[in-house]
Image (cartoon, rainbow, N blue to C red; front, side, top):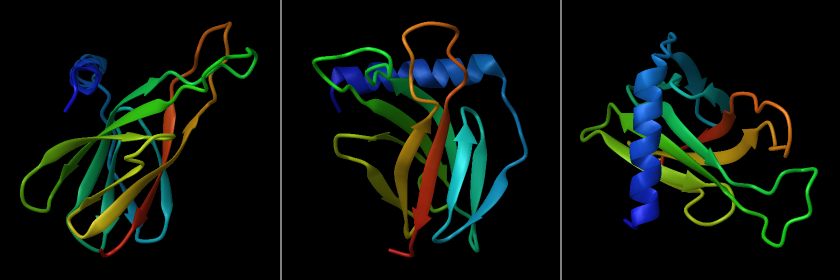
Length: 134
C-alpha cells in the first residue's frame, strides 16, 4: 500500500469518526446499486456482509474548469461480516474500481455531485453496485 493511500485511509477514518454520522443500515440485493453517504452502511441480502462508506477523496477536475489531468475519486470502504473485517480503497478511474469480499463484488459506479471550482461543495454520495456471488 503506498503512502498516499495510507494517508487517504487515515484521513477518511478520522473524518468519519469525528462526523458522528449514524444511520440505520439499508438493505441492498445482489445486482442492485445503492447510494451511500459517508458513514452510511448497507447490508447485502441475503447474507451477513456489510459495507460502510468511510471516506471519499474527490480530486476530479471541476466541471467548470479546463484541466490538464482529469483526476480521480478515491473511495474508502469498510467491509465486515464474512470473516476478517477489512478496509479497501477503490477508484472511479484507475484500478482497482471494484473489490471482492464475502463472495460479493463491490463496484464503484459514481461519486456525486461532480466537483465545481466555486461555491460550497455539498456532501459526496457514492453509487455502489453489488454483484455476486463470486
